[in-house]
Length: 118
Image (cartoon, rainbow, N blue to C red; front, side, top):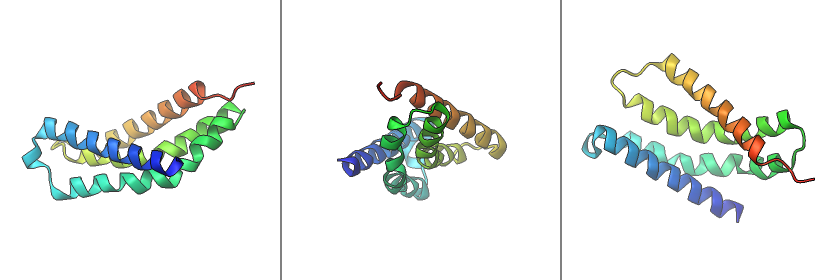
């Protein structure tokens, strides 16, 4: 079931990234590498998927947030940087800072929502 969830999540995130980028830049202008990069989301969701159930059972907030952050780090990097590079005004430093802030937000949000029951 965990494998199926990871596959579906990777496919959905990749499809959404294609739709959002296509609406913003035009589907005809998206390079082939962008579509191929979305395929990386499938293994990127499968490999760290073990962090999510483990994090949901961890009582310590900082450890739980760190595990959720690690779980989202690679898939979100693929999603974020593939879309950002399409922008003609791409700024690597701003993209990296935005990425780090969002991973931190994901980590804290998921750690807050998915805390273990007493």
